[in-house]
Image 1 (tube, helix red, strand yellow):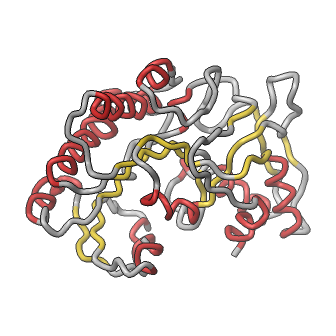
Image 2 (tube, helix red, strand yellow):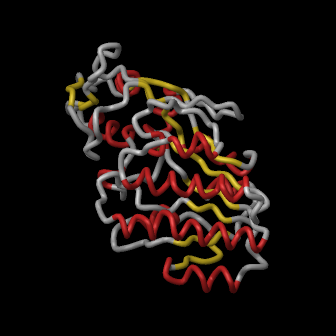
Length: 290
């Protein structure tokens, strides 16, 4: 939203549950045209159909431990379909959040191929990943069968996105957002233990994406894209924090994440045939620190 404002786009409508915590602070500095409860989405879209220039759909149940499949399907799949159909009918660009969880255990790689054959072969490990994958497949099918699509659309398979204003997300905060306050308090930092003989503890590779590089999403070609950043290890991230915080202590190794994932994937890094957004791990860590 801040990037949109800087680009002169000030009539921004937010559709979200603000709840009773401090989530409202995320939008406190923004100039809003409307703040809409999700239950009022359909009425709002119809009422303002002629004024909407784009829909950026980031909302989802992103917990990998959520077990209510009906809730996930309604929120992550059915709602996305409704927004897709609305944008296709009204001629409105549509950007949405897919997920790196669609790649499953990584055995088929992390390519940005968005053919139906490739997308159908992916096997997500949890219901959240499935809900994102099934919508990606629907998008590819609509495109290939020449059905109506939004004039511009892009699905972004996010990899470890982090940035400011994560304080309200609880266990769903990014790895970076979890690590930094612990290091700042001079407490032991817990990183993932490795189960792969080729990777030492903490040296599994991940793409870390500073949220600021995603503001170029609207310039992407139609399709489904990995939103990849600079590949780094969690040990590298901790060393950057150590350079910023002299009292940062050593790391311990945990066997599972708070999301109770299966055996951690040793190397999760996107290979993009399209334009790739990259940023320095050190610079990103300093963004968090500031």
